[in-house]
Amino acid sequence: MTGQELLQYNIDLNMQGVATDPDWIALKIQEGVLYEQWGKMLSEVKECLEACFGDDCDLHIKILEERSRTVTKYNWINYPYQETTIAWDVVFCPILHFKEFTITNTARHTHIIRDLYVSIDITFDFVTKKFKLENISGTRMTATSDEIDSGYLQSHLGSSYSIDHFSSFPYHHSTDKCIWKSFCLGNGEILDLLVELQNNFDCDIFQLLLFHIQTMVKWESTEGNPFIAMNRVAARRSLIPVDYNTCVRYYENMLKPAMQAWEPKKEVKIVYDETSGSFLIADDNQLEEFVKFSNNISDYNNICNVTGSVACVKDSSNNTCSFSTATSSRSVRVTTDHLNNKLVFRKQLVPFVIHRQDSNTENLQFFLHPQIKNYVKSKLQQDLTEKIFRYSAIEACY
Image 1 (tube, rainbow, N blue to C red):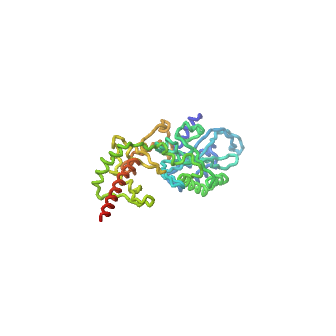
Image 2: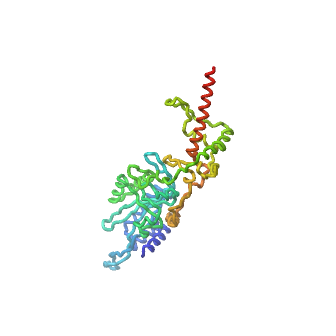
Image 3: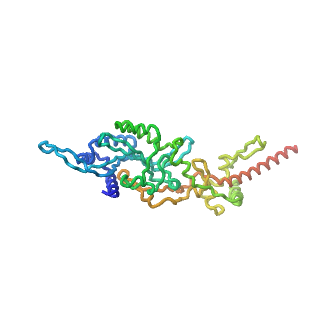
């Protein structure tokens, strides 16, 4: 079979779920297509997967090529003879699904990852008669525009969502039309477990490996030089400047009328600065909330005819960017390749989805543009200074 024919054959087999069907496995062993050792091995793997992941797991067969195999058989009088059959050079792949989770690191940066799938390659060496767990790879089937733009799959996964960057893994090495990248495992317990499993496959050790993978995908090791650090995902976001007149109009036309109607009244924190000997308006979260005339971000969209430039959001590294650039569905690097990516999982084709970050903005945590906040703060500071001066003058008269 050609590479494309083999790819389609793999897809068809996994759509039928044959790797989890003991009768099908037994039939292929009987036909001589699979080595008999696969029977017990796959039964144990399936049991471990279901114990750890329940319905969030699958088992794929990945046929790399067909080759001739000579086997010894015996006729009805027990006389041996040689027969040439077709054998598969095959890999079985446990597939783990992580629907949605938060990855973190020592700096307490966080990032939400959706629909990460992890695959483990299990092969059989017919010379040594031993199984090998050779590769742990991953793919994403839901991603944001920011993740696609930066090529972020997971911090320790090779980057890129483009099939053009997948030439080292031809289609006929895959079980579906999606992009699988190898994890950088570093030097640690996962590698030790892989070596131990190669020497002697044990269900308990394999289950321990699965638990370590669950921990691995949720942790970014900054000491281990990530392929792409999570705080670079939003690196293309920007803070759109606003002009002075926009700051003035916002304060005079939007905030001051709102301040008069607030019930109960909002307050800012006043602190004493020993260096200057002055009372100052504190620049804290209380001020961030004070400068908003509304808690609904959609009310800010058309202020001064600059859509989105007044409202801002902060990324996981606390960098401020304009709401318009943070939620825009940039698709510069999104091609039909991405949308054609499909993963076979539990007898269904899972399509690639672009997660729209602006799909629900009503409850989004947002902030006012720093230039506007600083202008409002300066006006509040001016009022505070004038009141302190008047109070001091009155006190001096008495």
